[in-house]
Structures are given as structure tokens and as C-alpha cells.
Image (cartoon, rainbow, N blue to C red; front, side):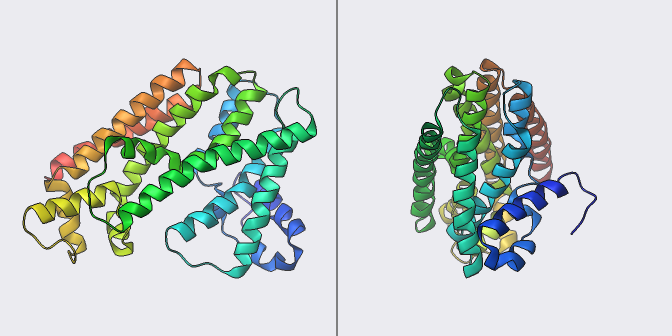
Length: 298
């Protein structure tokens, strides 16, 4: 294992937690890739960045370990939802990862609450946000089997695919004494994640076509081919990528993402969530460059 990147100690700590929970699978845990802990994702560090900016009373190392362990479960689940296959060992490891994540979030706790109340808070937060995630995935699966246009609410609600990550944001806000701002903060996160999802789906057109994952970008591109009287069910990758550009799907996807980031920034500013607002600005610049390239390619 590499030792020269800044999060190597965090990776070791997360693996130690999992190995203690399921020692029979120590070897499998040692082989888990960095990505399954979320440590190479900028979004992973957003709740800790908010905690620092708000001077929240949070044991940061314990908080980061909890997030890394929890990410194992969510990464495993996403791979199954996306039609992937995984090992039985990882199935058991992921189960323990979810338990350890919730237990550790509860230990960090909500202000002025008993340990039992902390656990109830953690479980209820996870359950409430998981219902939002379930609704978003249910909608994804409906589109997966049918070719039809996405509605504006469906596009906005793409952000709920990251809803299980809301619990750490709630913990940070509560520990910073900003409970009243939680609804606005979560709405900002939702719009930010919807923007990310739109751009991710645009980048993954070829992969999603191969997997039959009917995202907004892919669905509207295939509908363009169908409306033009062209073969869309067995279209080649190059045809789909070209159609996404000439039909305006790429441009519209970027424009919608920019709108999502703008709304997210406005909401983040309302609750002084500066790291999130700055991320929105950074992504807006990035999407602006993508728009320019889209125009040139047409």
C-alpha cells in the first residue's frame, strides 16, 4: 500500500475498523481499493470542510473514519444497483460497514442528547434520507426499462441519489448549532448533486448505453434518433455521441447543470456554507468550458 498520499492513515484506520468487525475477511479488506472508501472524491471532504468553517465541535479524525467506513456500504450498494456483480465477502463486509458507520455517527452525536437518543437520531436520519434515495433509484429503474423523456422534477430529484450522505451534513450542522439551517443546506446539497449527476451522465453516455442505464442524457439522445427516423435501439457509440451534440442534448445538459449549481450556491450562501458555495463556483467554471467545447464540436 502506498504511504505517500495524505489520506493513507485514514485508509488504514478504516480498514482496521472493518477488520475488527469481520476478522475472517482480513485479506479481502486489505485488498479493498482506495475508491471504495471515497477518499479520492472531493465530495467526501465537504462535510469536514463545513465542520471546520463553522467551528463545529466534532472529533475530526473519528468523523472522517466514520465517513470512510460508511462509504464502503454505499459504494457496494451502488455497484449492485448499477447491475454489477460483487463477491460474497464484500457483501458481508458492507453489512458491517453500515453498522459501524451508524454506530460511530451516533457516538459523535447530536448536542444535548443521551447516547440512546443519539442512536435514535442517527437511525432516523439515515432512514429518512434513505427514503429519498430509494425514490430516486425507483425512478431510475422505471426509466431503465422504458424510453421516455425526463420531467423537470425528475431531473432535480437526481440529487437525491446522494441523499444517504445527508446524515453527516445534519451532524455537522447540529454540532455547529445551526440546526435551523439544515433544510436549506440539504436542499443546496440536493441541487449540487443533481448538477454533478447531469455532468456524470453526459460523460458516461457510452458506458450507460452499453449497460442499458437510461439516464436523462442517453434517453433524450436516443429519442432524438428515434424522432429523426434513425435506428436507436442498436445505435453505435459514435452515433450516440454525435447525436448528443447535434441534437443539443449535451448543451442542454450543461445548461441545466449550471442552473443546478447556481441554485445550490444561492442556498449555500443563505446558510453560510462557504465550502459548498465555492464548489458550485468551481463546477460552474468547469461546465462553462464544457459548453464551449460542445459549441465548437457542432
